Length: 333
Image (cartoon, rainbow, N blue to C red):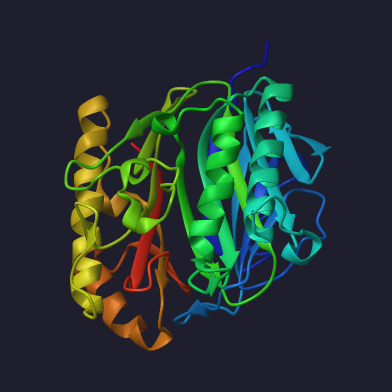
């Protein structure tokens, strides 16, 4: 029986500026820096940081109980009580397509099958949040966009591991210019509640115009843990129904994205009205396709959140070529 442990999050900051003991750290995300040679799981997100921030930032997931290191196949993970954080980093060049699958599809299926096998081994079965970073995500290869190839492999792992897509975790999938495929995840031995947006078709129910299989994620997830409610908002964009809206207008896309996030907060707050989530109370990562759009996006973000908001901006490719901005967030009620 694993004891409950309190989950903590330190927003992006310059490396070395926040002191935490080795035992406290579950995992780290490094933005703008390849730094995997650490004693804990590190997801290196090879995206340029935009704005006045330093060239690289790190965010830290840490806990109230000591965390223990582990390796499982390609997964580097840490376990603290009922919480599990892991990172999978794979070079696509090490994979070959087989039985009609592309190398990226094969990689995605292997990564997720290992992830699910680890959760079974650790009796920590419930995925709360997944971060997927895929090089050249919008490029078409072998007759299909690379994001769609990744979705096929991920879907096959969900199906092969008998995991229903309607109970998928909160997630994002963004594109880097180069580098490995990187997947980080946060899991627990208690289930999160998937949250959907009534303004949007659920991602796992998209029509086939977006690929032979749908993306496998929920719009958000609400997770109760040690008396605290965590809300994880998936990568969210300017989509109504299943269609991209405001094509070519980055400011309008940003405003529409916040309209979708606000609906997710309303849906989450119906589940736990005593400690309501607020837009200003969340931590945000904003992905911008074109660095030149940063001033317009930042102005739109500040107009909605205010000057004291906790936001980091990075340049990234979005999962649809006509999307110019995507926003994810998390926080407690």
